[in-house]
Length: 122
Image (cartoon, rainbow, N blue to C red; front, side):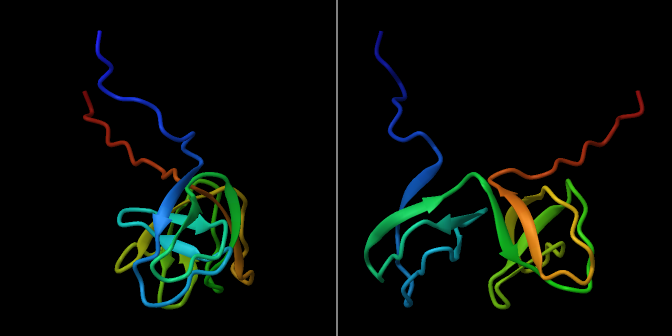
């Protein structure tokens, strides 16, 4: 039997080519199209480096808004902050520790998102 798919990585990190105009620094949040990862090494422009797509991370976040465990968080690339606002922001992950409105750091599990289940009422 021929194998259709074969494993190539364990899925905790991916190889990422920095096609942007600025170098990526260790710990930078890296937008990846439909979700975000975290740079595990510095990645010069045009080079390949590793970006984590799992784990729990502390990231800068908006202040003035409380986060609850299970909230879906988004990355505002312009302000370099996690937020609960989806408009114009990239999905980041799920909040895994409460954050008071005065705090400016959120704990987020990247690579997963909360799911809103709608009952059919049936």
